[in-house]
Image (cartoon, rainbow, N blue to C red; front, side, top):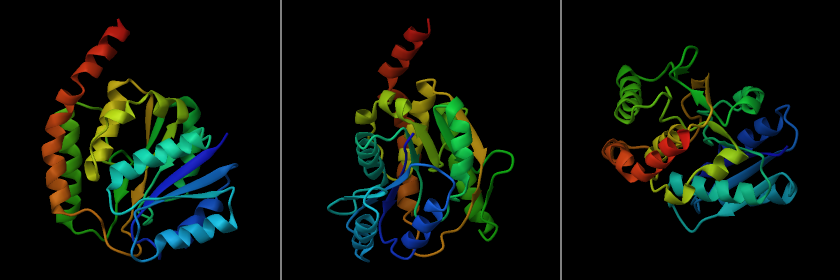
Length: 247
């Protein structure tokens, strides 16, 4: 059973070597990495190529022409991972905000679920202790806002640390996913619930990145706040189809 970890990168040269080392230290058989780089000016893509040359059966690199956004990076990464034979696909950040060791817990849960989510907003989950109050409030409100408007049950609908079963990704209408950036996570979670996937959330500690700068700014958050309203209308046909199947 092959597990692929899809890691989008843009200027993550300082983080990537340590992350790769920690991932391959995990007690997981047949673990492979797919690094999706958006032509990082700091040479992240070239470093990824070196790693792939050293471990050609374990590290794969997908180069893109420029900074095209998180959503398209994941969608192309998912497609490539499935082409390479992935049975499970993990999506995670390269900045250590997602604890690599939690993937072992994901592995224990995934046989009974279609999607496992690393959650900041269930019992045992938390945000970086150094974050100021306003930042924690903004993060929590953004998650509550999206979850409430969409009527979902996923507690961390904005979270980006997930493990998917191959069969779940193959069922998802990925060609209809239009969101990029922060909103991509919300759209994928919304779709997963609309399709009645079996979903499990496990608690994580969401840490501040070690090196580099965050890619999320106010404009991205504002775009997401507006886009949430559009999702139910976009997938009205899918919701109707799922209700008919349930009868």
